[in-house]
Amino acid sequence: MRLTKQTNYAVRMLMYCAANDGKLSRIPEIAKAYGVSELFLFKILQPLNKAGLVETVRGRNGGVRLPRPADQITLFDVVKVTEDSFAMAECFEAGEIECPLVDSCGLNSALRRALNAFFAVLAEYTIDDLVKARPQINFLLGLEPHPQPQTAA
Image (cartoon, rainbow, N blue to C red; front, side, top):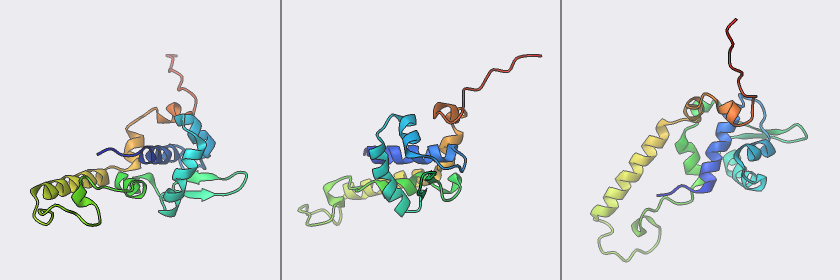
């Protein structure tokens, strides 16, 4: 299984907003920090906003921010909004399936169990976990200048 670029950058956008500590983040700044097009981020913004994972403020001084604390937004929340399909095999897809084992297949059962385990692990991690795992994230994202080394007095 491979997650899409949309999911990857949706998580990154939420991490940026979390690192920006409640302030409004602007799409051009986020795009610059990650080296991705603004248009791509605007496309991702719509489903995130609709799902309540971000909130947008319009206007000249507008931007985007998290509507709730980052420790209340899981990776699973993001993935279920940004991924179109979790069909790991033909038997996961809707529609007519030609396999005679579809209702009693060991592969189907194993893949479903693996997918559920994948979702369970994603549900254990929050956006806050990802941000706190990188102590210099604000510097790396260009949100603050490089910390100056402390000199002995």
